[in-house]
Amino acid sequence: MSDTPQTLPYAGIRVVEFTHMVMGPTCGMLLADLGADVIKVEPVGHGREGDATRKLIGSGAGFFPMFNRNKKSVALDLLTPEGKEAALKLIATADVVSENFKPGTMQKLGLDYASLKTLNPRLIYVSHKGFLPGPYEHRTALDEVVQMMGGLAYMTGRPGDPLRAGTSVNDIMGGMFGAIGAMAALAQREKTGQGQEVQSALFENNVFLVAQHMMQFAVTGKAAAPMPARISAWAVYDVFQVKDGEQIFLAVVSDSAWKTFCEAFGFADLLADERLRRNNDRVRAREWMLPELRQRLASHSAAELGAVFEANALPFAPITQPHDLFDDPHLNATGGLAPIALPDGRPAKAVLLPLTLDGERPPVRLSPPKLGEHNVEVLTALGYTPEQAQALGVSQDTM
Image (cartoon, rainbow, N blue to C red; front, side, top):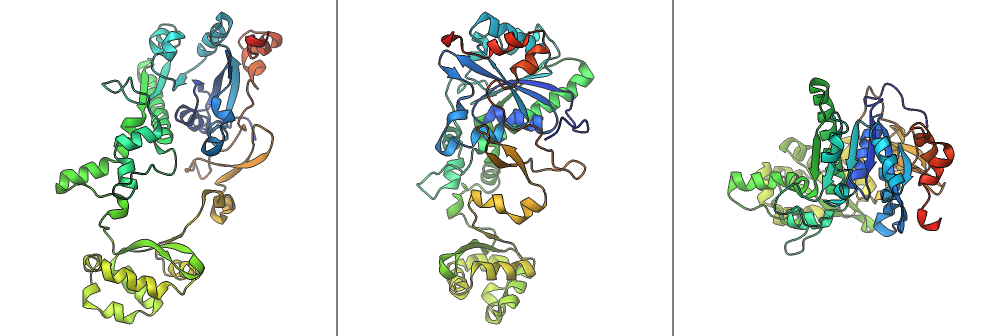
């Protein structure tokens, strides 16, 4: 893990974030991966011991190590005059401030945009919230809340059984849109010399995700059916249970692909069947055609089917659990996974941003930091002595 490569696009940009959970940290991680110097201010004192996601278990255990790499941690008690003063000195060096606390929290601390822009008109301030300003802004939102009220859970589950998506889609994408907004504001600052406030929200992000289904209704006049009950645009586009109970997703999405599929498996009778000549004919025949295909393919293993589909450039996918991806040959061969140290010192692999810059994936430069790990490094640059910097990172409750 090296120092910031100066070739990364946001090298030289400093981001100070007051974030927790997933949405705000995602924004900072993205900017950090692209080269920004991101300093995570974590609360201490009054029963707080840094970002609460450091100690989550279960489905939250991966939050902190995933979304806080390439960052430095400074621990401060913002409820003390000394802690707030240090935060303001740090913010004075920032290009971007990012936060995702409840509405009013930063205002109570005197760290809201209205307060800070008078100190630095060039500051870009990114707020990540549940809702953009409006009738819902007072509500407490979570990813699952907005998935339920924003149509995504309805579309994901079976009819009558709404189901949240299997990852923090709105938190992650909401953080990404916050980062995109910061990038846009930085570009505009180059023209105007002025900063601005950027807002991103979970609910509005979720609505953006389901907008294609809203437009489907606008075009057809018919409500979109949940994905498990939808009328597929393609006849063969489904999960098949095959030999030894294995599962595999198979897709045949064009007339030429249907010909290739039938020839590859010796299904000359299906290829000659007039009822299956065109894709739309096959969609209409799904009720009887799919059981027939399931029966014919059931004796093959998933690996055998995958090999035939791959050899014939037909889409397929094994049904994979997330942890299996650590051993994925493509990810490992292409550098999509990078070594990190977890906060407790254990080694792990981090998933890098899904893009390349000049053929390279933006790297991991810093493992997820320990609480207050960079107090001395960051605060001594602001004029504090090492002893003062260390003291600011210690809970005053125990002193």
